[in-house]
Length: 356
Image 1 (cartoon, one colour):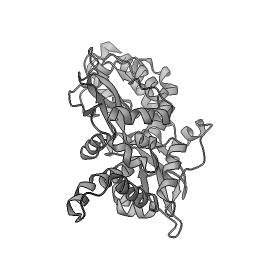
Image 2: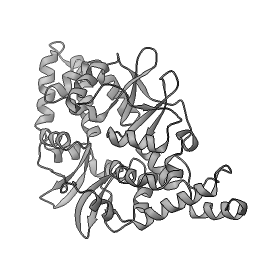
Image 3: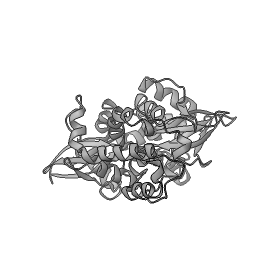
Image 4: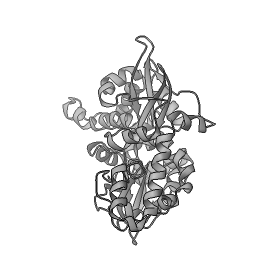
Protein backbone atom coordinates (compact mmCIF):
# COMPACT_ATOMS: atom_id res chain seq x y z
CA UNK A 1 0.00 0.00 0.00
CA UNK A 2 1.13 3.58 -0.55
CA UNK A 3 2.77 4.94 2.56
CA UNK A 4 1.49 8.19 4.05
CA UNK A 5 5.03 8.94 5.19
CA UNK A 6 6.69 8.62 1.78
CA UNK A 7 8.22 11.73 0.22
CA UNK A 8 5.99 13.36 -2.42
CA UNK A 9 7.00 12.76 -6.04
CA UNK A 10 8.62 15.83 -7.58
CA UNK A 11 6.59 15.51 -10.77
CA UNK A 12 3.33 16.29 -8.99
CA UNK A 13 2.01 19.79 -9.33
CA UNK A 14 0.45 22.12 -6.84
CA UNK A 15 -2.82 21.48 -8.65
CA UNK A 16 -2.48 17.81 -7.63
CA UNK A 17 -1.71 18.77 -4.07
CA UNK A 18 -4.64 21.18 -3.82
CA UNK A 19 -6.96 18.50 -5.19
CA UNK A 20 -5.76 15.96 -2.60
CA UNK A 21 -5.96 18.56 0.16
CA UNK A 22 -9.49 19.49 -0.84
CA UNK A 23 -10.51 15.82 -0.88
CA UNK A 24 -8.99 15.23 2.54
CA UNK A 25 -10.87 18.27 3.87
CA UNK A 26 -14.06 16.66 2.52
CA UNK A 27 -13.31 13.42 4.37
CA UNK A 28 -12.63 15.25 7.61
CA UNK A 29 -15.74 17.42 7.33
CA UNK A 30 -18.21 14.61 6.64
CA UNK A 31 -19.49 12.21 9.27
CA UNK A 32 -20.40 8.57 8.84
CA UNK A 33 -23.96 9.66 9.55
CA UNK A 34 -23.84 11.80 6.40
CA UNK A 35 -23.01 8.72 4.37
CA UNK A 36 -25.87 6.73 5.90
CA UNK A 37 -28.33 9.55 5.20
CA UNK A 38 -27.17 9.65 1.57
CA UNK A 39 -28.15 6.00 1.14
CA UNK A 40 -31.86 6.57 0.58
CA UNK A 41 -32.57 2.87 0.05
CA UNK A 42 -30.55 1.60 3.02
CA UNK A 43 -32.39 -1.18 4.85
CA UNK A 44 -32.66 -1.45 8.63
CA UNK A 45 -29.73 -3.19 10.33
CA UNK A 46 -29.25 -6.69 8.92
CA UNK A 47 -28.18 -9.27 11.49
CA UNK A 48 -28.80 -12.89 12.46
CA UNK A 49 -29.50 -14.47 15.85
CA UNK A 50 -27.12 -17.01 17.35
CA UNK A 51 -29.95 -19.57 17.32
CA UNK A 52 -30.51 -19.25 13.57
CA UNK A 53 -29.38 -22.29 11.62
CA UNK A 54 -26.72 -22.15 8.94
CA UNK A 55 -29.18 -22.46 5.99
CA UNK A 56 -31.11 -19.43 7.32
CA UNK A 57 -27.91 -17.41 7.58
CA UNK A 58 -26.79 -18.40 4.09
CA UNK A 59 -30.21 -17.33 2.80
CA UNK A 60 -29.79 -13.89 4.42
CA UNK A 61 -26.35 -13.50 2.82
CA UNK A 62 -27.73 -14.54 -0.57
CA UNK A 63 -30.98 -12.56 -0.45
CA UNK A 64 -29.31 -9.37 0.79
CA UNK A 65 -26.31 -9.82 -1.53
CA UNK A 66 -23.83 -9.35 1.29
CA UNK A 67 -20.72 -11.33 2.21
CA UNK A 68 -20.87 -10.99 6.00
CA UNK A 69 -23.42 -10.45 8.74
CA UNK A 70 -23.16 -9.75 12.52
CA UNK A 71 -24.43 -12.37 14.98
CA UNK A 72 -26.46 -11.36 18.05
CA UNK A 73 -26.93 -13.57 21.12
CA UNK A 74 -30.42 -12.84 22.51
CA UNK A 75 -29.62 -14.64 25.77
CA UNK A 76 -26.56 -12.58 26.71
CA UNK A 77 -27.74 -9.52 24.74
CA UNK A 78 -24.30 -9.30 23.20
CA UNK A 79 -22.88 -9.24 19.69
CA UNK A 80 -20.95 -12.46 19.10
CA UNK A 81 -18.97 -11.46 16.04
CA UNK A 82 -19.28 -11.33 12.28
CA UNK A 83 -19.79 -14.46 10.20
CA UNK A 84 -18.47 -14.28 6.64
CA UNK A 85 -18.85 -16.35 3.51
CA UNK A 86 -15.18 -17.24 3.91
CA UNK A 87 -16.06 -18.95 7.23
CA UNK A 88 -18.54 -21.20 5.44
CA UNK A 89 -16.04 -21.88 2.66
CA UNK A 90 -13.49 -22.93 5.28
CA UNK A 91 -15.85 -25.39 7.00
CA UNK A 92 -17.30 -26.84 3.79
CA UNK A 93 -13.83 -27.34 2.33
CA UNK A 94 -12.50 -28.85 5.55
CA UNK A 95 -15.34 -31.37 5.74
CA UNK A 96 -14.78 -32.34 2.12
CA UNK A 97 -11.05 -32.77 2.65
CA UNK A 98 -11.65 -35.05 5.64
CA UNK A 99 -13.24 -37.79 3.49
CA UNK A 100 -9.86 -39.28 2.55
CA UNK A 101 -9.05 -39.58 6.27
CA UNK A 102 -12.43 -41.18 6.98
CA UNK A 103 -11.84 -43.69 4.18
CA UNK A 104 -8.39 -44.51 5.53
CA UNK A 105 -9.77 -45.46 8.96
CA UNK A 106 -12.92 -47.17 7.67
CA UNK A 107 -12.84 -50.94 8.31
CA UNK A 108 -15.48 -51.54 5.65
CA UNK A 109 -13.75 -49.69 2.84
CA UNK A 110 -14.24 -46.22 1.36
CA UNK A 111 -17.46 -44.48 2.30
CA UNK A 112 -19.68 -44.01 -0.80
CA UNK A 113 -19.46 -40.43 -2.04
CA UNK A 114 -23.24 -39.91 -1.95
CA UNK A 115 -23.46 -41.12 1.66
CA UNK A 116 -20.63 -38.88 2.75
CA UNK A 117 -22.16 -35.84 1.04
CA UNK A 118 -25.47 -36.56 2.78
CA UNK A 119 -23.73 -36.67 6.15
CA UNK A 120 -21.71 -33.52 5.47
CA UNK A 121 -24.84 -31.62 4.48
CA UNK A 122 -26.70 -32.80 7.59
CA UNK A 123 -23.85 -31.75 9.90
CA UNK A 124 -23.64 -28.18 8.63
CA UNK A 125 -27.33 -27.65 7.91
CA UNK A 126 -28.37 -28.66 11.44
CA UNK A 127 -25.82 -26.37 13.06
CA UNK A 128 -26.90 -23.14 14.77
CA UNK A 129 -24.81 -20.15 13.74
CA UNK A 130 -23.96 -19.50 17.40
CA UNK A 131 -22.38 -22.96 17.62
CA UNK A 132 -20.74 -22.35 14.27
CA UNK A 133 -19.35 -19.04 15.51
CA UNK A 134 -17.95 -20.70 18.63
CA UNK A 135 -16.28 -23.46 16.61
CA UNK A 136 -14.75 -20.87 14.30
CA UNK A 137 -13.70 -18.69 17.27
CA UNK A 138 -15.36 -15.70 15.60
CA UNK A 139 -15.15 -13.34 18.60
CA UNK A 140 -11.35 -13.51 18.28
CA UNK A 141 -10.93 -14.06 14.53
CA UNK A 142 -13.70 -11.75 13.25
CA UNK A 143 -14.26 -9.34 16.16
CA UNK A 144 -16.78 -6.59 15.76
CA UNK A 145 -15.22 -3.18 15.22
CA UNK A 146 -17.58 -0.51 16.51
CA UNK A 147 -17.49 2.98 15.05
CA UNK A 148 -19.38 6.06 16.21
CA UNK A 149 -21.86 7.57 13.76
CA UNK A 150 -20.49 11.07 14.48
CA UNK A 151 -16.89 10.24 13.62
CA UNK A 152 -15.45 11.41 10.31
CA UNK A 153 -15.04 9.53 7.04
CA UNK A 154 -11.34 10.27 7.32
CA UNK A 155 -11.19 8.31 10.59
CA UNK A 156 -13.14 5.43 9.06
CA UNK A 157 -10.88 5.25 6.02
CA UNK A 158 -7.87 5.19 8.33
CA UNK A 159 -9.27 2.01 9.91
CA UNK A 160 -9.94 0.39 6.53
CA UNK A 161 -6.49 1.39 5.30
CA UNK A 162 -4.33 0.57 8.32
CA UNK A 163 -6.02 -2.27 10.21
CA UNK A 164 -5.30 -5.70 8.76
CA UNK A 165 -8.24 -7.52 7.21
CA UNK A 166 -10.75 -4.94 8.43
CA UNK A 167 -13.39 -4.70 5.70
CA UNK A 168 -16.42 -3.49 7.66
CA UNK A 169 -17.46 -1.80 10.91
CA UNK A 170 -20.61 -1.75 13.02
CA UNK A 171 -21.86 1.83 13.30
CA UNK A 172 -23.22 2.88 16.68
CA UNK A 173 -25.53 5.78 17.47
CA UNK A 174 -25.13 6.04 21.22
CA UNK A 175 -25.38 2.46 22.54
CA UNK A 176 -27.36 1.16 19.56
CA UNK A 177 -25.82 -0.56 16.54
CA UNK A 178 -27.63 1.01 13.57
CA UNK A 179 -25.71 -0.23 10.53
CA UNK A 180 -22.88 -2.32 9.18
CA UNK A 181 -20.71 -0.24 6.87
CA UNK A 182 -18.30 -1.93 4.48
CA UNK A 183 -15.39 -0.75 2.37
CA UNK A 184 -17.64 -1.12 -0.66
CA UNK A 185 -20.29 1.14 0.89
CA UNK A 186 -17.72 3.87 1.52
CA UNK A 187 -16.32 3.67 -2.02
CA UNK A 188 -19.82 3.74 -3.46
CA UNK A 189 -20.43 7.02 -1.61
CA UNK A 190 -17.07 8.51 -2.67
CA UNK A 191 -17.67 7.42 -6.26
CA UNK A 192 -20.44 10.01 -6.40
CA UNK A 193 -18.19 12.89 -5.35
CA UNK A 194 -15.03 11.89 -7.24
CA UNK A 195 -15.86 14.09 -10.28
CA UNK A 196 -15.35 17.11 -7.99
CA UNK A 197 -11.66 16.18 -7.72
CA UNK A 198 -10.49 15.77 -11.34
CA UNK A 199 -6.78 15.67 -10.54
CA UNK A 200 -7.40 12.55 -8.48
CA UNK A 201 -10.09 11.09 -10.72
CA UNK A 202 -7.86 11.09 -13.79
CA UNK A 203 -4.80 9.53 -12.13
CA UNK A 204 -3.73 6.37 -13.94
CA UNK A 205 -3.19 3.22 -11.93
CA UNK A 206 0.49 3.11 -12.93
CA UNK A 207 0.96 6.51 -11.29
CA UNK A 208 -0.17 5.49 -7.82
CA UNK A 209 0.11 1.73 -7.44
CA UNK A 210 3.26 -0.32 -8.04
CA UNK A 211 2.80 -3.40 -10.21
CA UNK A 212 3.96 -6.85 -9.18
CA UNK A 213 3.86 -10.31 -10.68
CA UNK A 214 2.63 -11.89 -7.45
CA UNK A 215 -0.91 -12.81 -8.52
CA UNK A 216 -2.50 -15.91 -7.04
CA UNK A 217 -4.39 -17.92 -9.65
CA UNK A 218 -5.91 -21.30 -10.46
CA UNK A 219 -6.50 -22.96 -13.80
CA UNK A 220 -10.09 -23.17 -14.99
CA UNK A 221 -9.53 -26.93 -15.28
CA UNK A 222 -8.64 -27.22 -11.56
CA UNK A 223 -11.37 -28.39 -9.20
CA UNK A 224 -13.31 -25.90 -7.12
CA UNK A 225 -12.08 -27.51 -3.92
CA UNK A 226 -8.47 -26.98 -5.08
CA UNK A 227 -9.28 -23.30 -5.59
CA UNK A 228 -10.88 -22.94 -2.16
CA UNK A 229 -8.00 -24.79 -0.50
CA UNK A 230 -5.57 -22.28 -2.00
CA UNK A 231 -7.82 -19.40 -1.02
CA UNK A 232 -7.85 -20.60 2.62
CA UNK A 233 -4.12 -21.42 2.67
CA UNK A 234 -3.14 -17.96 1.41
CA UNK A 235 -5.76 -16.22 3.58
CA UNK A 236 -7.26 -14.29 0.68
CA UNK A 237 -10.86 -13.89 -0.45
CA UNK A 238 -10.42 -14.20 -4.22
CA UNK A 239 -8.23 -15.74 -6.91
CA UNK A 240 -7.68 -15.14 -10.61
CA UNK A 241 -8.80 -17.91 -12.95
CA UNK A 242 -6.71 -18.47 -16.07
CA UNK A 243 -6.76 -20.81 -19.06
CA UNK A 244 -3.88 -23.00 -20.24
CA UNK A 245 -2.31 -19.98 -21.95
CA UNK A 246 -2.30 -18.01 -18.71
CA UNK A 247 -4.97 -15.60 -19.92
CA UNK A 248 -7.49 -14.28 -17.40
CA UNK A 249 -10.89 -15.89 -17.91
CA UNK A 250 -12.53 -15.06 -14.58
CA UNK A 251 -12.13 -15.04 -10.82
CA UNK A 252 -13.33 -17.18 -7.95
CA UNK A 253 -14.09 -15.94 -4.44
CA UNK A 254 -15.73 -17.02 -1.21
CA UNK A 255 -19.00 -15.42 -2.37
CA UNK A 256 -19.27 -17.93 -5.22
CA UNK A 257 -20.27 -20.53 -2.63
CA UNK A 258 -23.68 -18.80 -2.68
CA UNK A 259 -24.30 -20.47 -6.04
CA UNK A 260 -24.56 -23.84 -4.31
CA UNK A 261 -27.19 -24.90 -1.78
CA UNK A 262 -27.96 -27.99 0.30
CA UNK A 263 -26.00 -31.04 -0.78
CA UNK A 264 -24.62 -29.05 -3.72
CA UNK A 265 -22.46 -27.15 -1.22
CA UNK A 266 -20.30 -30.27 -1.16
CA UNK A 267 -20.92 -32.14 -4.40
CA UNK A 268 -20.22 -29.05 -6.53
CA UNK A 269 -16.74 -28.79 -5.04
CA UNK A 270 -15.74 -31.70 -7.29
CA UNK A 271 -16.58 -29.64 -10.38
CA UNK A 272 -13.94 -27.86 -12.40
CA UNK A 273 -13.55 -24.18 -11.59
CA UNK A 274 -14.98 -23.44 -15.05
CA UNK A 275 -18.18 -25.41 -14.38
CA UNK A 276 -18.43 -24.22 -10.78
CA UNK A 277 -18.35 -20.59 -11.90
CA UNK A 278 -20.98 -21.28 -14.58
CA UNK A 279 -23.38 -22.38 -11.83
CA UNK A 280 -22.48 -19.33 -9.74
CA UNK A 281 -23.05 -17.07 -12.77
CA UNK A 282 -26.58 -18.42 -13.12
CA UNK A 283 -27.29 -17.70 -9.45
CA UNK A 284 -25.89 -14.16 -9.61
CA UNK A 285 -27.36 -13.46 -13.05
CA UNK A 286 -24.03 -12.25 -14.35
CA UNK A 287 -22.08 -12.77 -17.52
CA UNK A 288 -19.03 -15.00 -17.53
CA UNK A 289 -16.80 -12.31 -19.03
CA UNK A 290 -13.91 -11.35 -16.71
CA UNK A 291 -13.76 -7.74 -15.55
CA UNK A 292 -10.19 -6.46 -15.86
CA UNK A 293 -8.23 -3.26 -16.38
CA UNK A 294 -4.86 -2.22 -17.72
CA UNK A 295 -2.25 -0.27 -15.77
CA UNK A 296 -3.36 2.81 -17.74
CA UNK A 297 -6.88 2.77 -16.28
CA UNK A 298 -7.84 5.94 -14.43
CA UNK A 299 -9.17 6.03 -10.88
CA UNK A 300 -12.60 6.93 -12.29
CA UNK A 301 -12.58 3.93 -14.64
CA UNK A 302 -11.52 1.63 -11.82
CA UNK A 303 -14.20 2.84 -9.42
CA UNK A 304 -16.83 2.73 -12.19
CA UNK A 305 -16.10 -0.98 -12.74
CA UNK A 306 -15.99 -1.81 -9.04
CA UNK A 307 -19.32 -0.13 -8.28
CA UNK A 308 -21.17 -1.16 -11.44
CA UNK A 309 -20.22 -4.83 -11.07
CA UNK A 310 -20.31 -4.88 -7.26
CA UNK A 311 -16.73 -6.18 -7.11
CA UNK A 312 -14.30 -6.38 -4.22
CA UNK A 313 -11.24 -6.68 -6.46
CA UNK A 314 -10.07 -6.08 -10.01
CA UNK A 315 -7.33 -7.86 -11.88
CA UNK A 316 -4.85 -5.87 -13.90
CA UNK A 317 -3.85 -7.57 -17.14
CA UNK A 318 -1.02 -7.05 -19.61
CA UNK A 319 -1.39 -6.73 -23.39
CA UNK A 320 -1.73 -10.50 -23.69
CA UNK A 321 -4.61 -10.56 -21.21
CA UNK A 322 -2.53 -12.22 -18.48
CA UNK A 323 -3.07 -11.08 -14.88
CA UNK A 324 -0.14 -9.11 -13.48
CA UNK A 325 -1.71 -7.57 -10.40
CA UNK A 326 -4.77 -7.68 -8.18
CA UNK A 327 -6.28 -4.40 -7.02
CA UNK A 328 -8.39 -4.60 -3.86
CA UNK A 329 -10.84 -2.19 -2.28
CA UNK A 330 -8.23 -1.64 0.43
CA UNK A 331 -5.75 -0.51 -2.23
CA UNK A 332 -8.19 2.09 -3.56
CA UNK A 333 -9.17 3.30 -0.09
CA UNK A 334 -5.51 3.60 0.91
CA UNK A 335 -4.79 5.75 -2.14
CA UNK A 336 -7.78 8.00 -1.45
CA UNK A 337 -6.94 8.33 2.23
CA UNK A 338 -3.14 8.29 2.43
CA UNK A 339 -1.92 9.94 -0.75
CA UNK A 340 -0.78 13.14 0.94
CA UNK A 341 -0.52 14.22 4.55
CA UNK A 342 -0.70 17.77 5.85
CA UNK A 343 3.06 17.64 6.53
CA UNK A 344 3.84 16.51 2.99
CA UNK A 345 1.72 19.27 1.51
CA UNK A 346 3.46 21.90 3.62
CA UNK A 347 6.92 20.52 2.81
CA UNK A 348 6.22 20.42 -0.90
CA UNK A 349 4.78 23.92 -0.96
CA UNK A 350 7.78 25.32 0.97
CA UNK A 351 10.29 23.57 -1.33
CA UNK A 352 8.51 24.60 -4.55
CA UNK A 353 7.14 28.14 -4.11
CA UNK A 354 7.34 28.63 -7.88
CA UNK A 355 4.72 25.90 -8.36
CA UNK A 356 2.09 27.71 -6.31
